Length: 177
Image: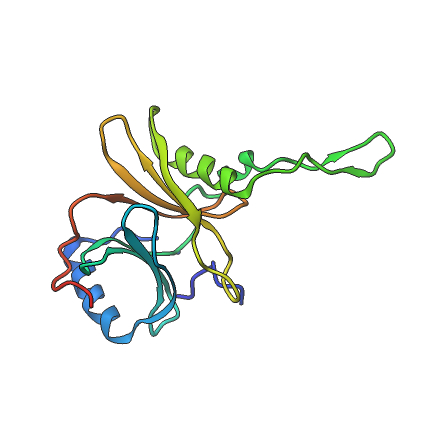
């Protein structure tokens, strides 16, 4: 299955299937790009596997993996479009451009909409590093009132492609590196 973020979907995986898939991915993965600092002391790495699937990985300098997510489809299923300003039609029938918008802010709103409940705040954000053959987006770290932290990746058109709780390192075997 080819990732729809590629210019040319998300399943629920058990911890065991993630470990098996991680071992396979470590052997055949091709890094696309990496963000050396995610603003929180870690790095974000984009990988593709032998089937051209796109993966997002969040790891620290010691090689501990905190998020590992295969990108399948927009997790908001198109509902994030409400955060994108519409084009209005003037009385003369011509399109009136909307006021300038901040693509990163739209990605933040989409990520916050995916997290149920209120009381969350953005604690880190930036460009996700994808470009060229991939649709660029933004990473957003969100912290809840309960102290839980989530990593989200979304695009400027309010599509959420990855969402993962960041806590203890995932039990994926030996550290990367």
